[in-house]
Each structure stands twice: as C-alpha cells, then as structure tokens.
Image 1 (cartoon, rainbow, N blue to C red):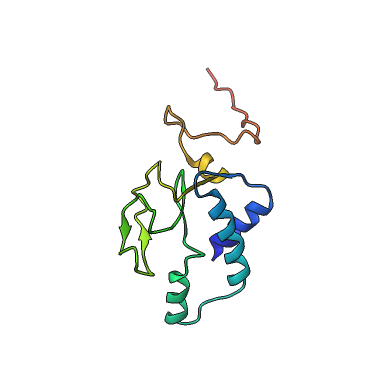
Image 2: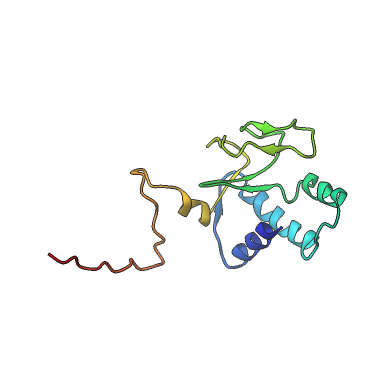
Length: 133
C-alpha cells in the first residue's frame, strides 16, 4: 500500500510512464488509491483479499514495473493464472511483455549500455576535489 501511495504521489507530480501497460498502470494506481487509501488489513482474511485483488498487483523491479495480468504475462508466474495469489517471477522480466510499464524511477535505475548508472539530469554533478601530489 505504501508503494501505491508513492506511485500516486509521483504521478500527481508529473512522473512519466511509458510502455504497453502505461495506461493500465495509471488506472490501477488511481483506482487502488481511492479504494485502499488509509486502510490497514487487520487480519489474515483481509490481507489475503487485498493480495488477491488485481488493482494493487503492480510490482516494481529494477528497470521495469509489471502491471500484472496473468493471462497476458510473458514472464514465469508463481502460481497458476487463475490463482488469486499469483505473482510474477521478479527475476524473469521479458522486454516484450504486454504487462510492462516504465516509470521515470525505472529509467533511472537501469544501467547504461556501458554498465554505469544513469545520472539524474535534473541534478548538477557533484564537485570533485583535487588530489594532492
């Protein structure tokens, strides 16, 4: 639920979302926020119902976010597609999966082609100190 609250806040402040599941991401974040904001599961049944609800089934990974739709997922799933507790295998992201959305946070988390981390272009570079000879 904390992730969804952060997602909603980032969207409200202009975070860009792209990819085949970008629209589904925006819809789910908004709907889940309306439905679950301020709620805390107090028992196992409520927690299971929450986990089984498709709205909050948004899984953030490094470099990509999965808006889970088990019927169209290209990645391996933990559980079966008809199981309400199904989860994507987070280490099995497939670039052509229709469940992928990429947020600004995902883009910054992805390394460049040379393996170095990307820099946030909005922040100036940190000054370096001269070394003594």
